[in-house]
Image (cartoon, rainbow, N blue to C red; front, top):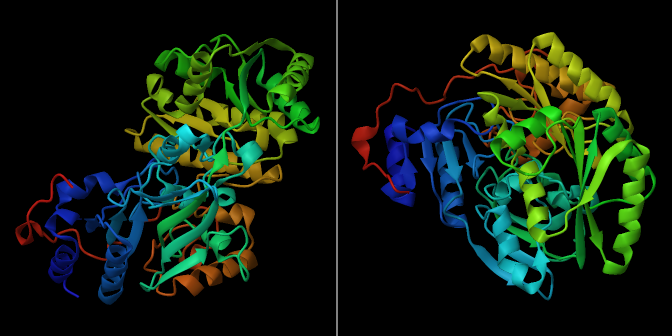
Length: 492
């Protein structure tokens, strides 16, 4: 199908204001929170499931790639249109369709902001548990695609544990429901298979989420340590003791310096590391938990263990942790975040290896992570204006992931694989594993048009490490000028 005809058909489906195509208009959709960039040919803004279905069917007829995009807060290049094509943006599908408090669930569109669900039900004593640090901006569709977590996934689990059902437009345009509104649905768990598939098996258009009652009592504790090793040992002791906090987060000195330079959150800038701990439950049981966790910290040489006395102080402490990634801008032009997972008992060892990577490449590395479940987020500080630094920072990131795998861990806990860690899949999976995963993907997406070049290594080099960031040509040539074919849809 001719490119001009594709534009005209998209505009007929969604109106001229629902389609972007001029180079200056699609610039914003070339990237997400990772390093990769690629130009889309079209950006569209559906309002309904039928709109999404129509766009997908058009893309199939035209043999052009298509991919979903939420708020663009992803950190692995999952929403980057590596092969060009149509980016389907869900900012207009942002309604909470139903709140069903008696059954502890809600039905939402994929463009709903994560935090908006909690705000919609907070007055009735409920909330949506998964809380990525970007929860004020990230969307539920993106959370489903990446199976996002957050600080409180230690006690409550990740997105998959809080989603009952999905309405999905499959890559051929068929609309199906996976899962449902009940706790258990007979047959294969296709809902579970789809969550975390990063938009490569279809596009979510409705989500049934689980609501949770707000705990009776919440206490937040800040434990301050002279060394990151002491803090790591405290984490292991706390979890091994059987007292599982709702959240158990760690920041090292460089992260503390960045946060305090960006905002005043009350972290001591001379500390080697801090633990931010949430304790939840019935009021009667909180003192025992608090006493036990305090003792574990003190046994590991905590300088101080301070309980937040007010809701405002608690919010201040958590604002520093939630804003830690963005705070890196106060001390560095750019940062590159990794997302490895390791057994908790290997924290000191792997953190030493991260320090060695820092020394080897000459990059400062700040550590901000979900210590309770071993989900590391090393932030490598660099300057993306220097191409040599970009190449080096990618190598440094891969070495950190190798250290995680060597420790018995994984290359992603919640940020996904996308394009950024696609070739690193070979660090974790052998050829047979990758072939099996590709077969599952192709069962849903046989043409490969739905979010191509993501998650699995591509082509001949798919089981080799080192082919990172290869670019495939845009299926539609960039030299086409379509500005004469429609009005500029500013304001969409």
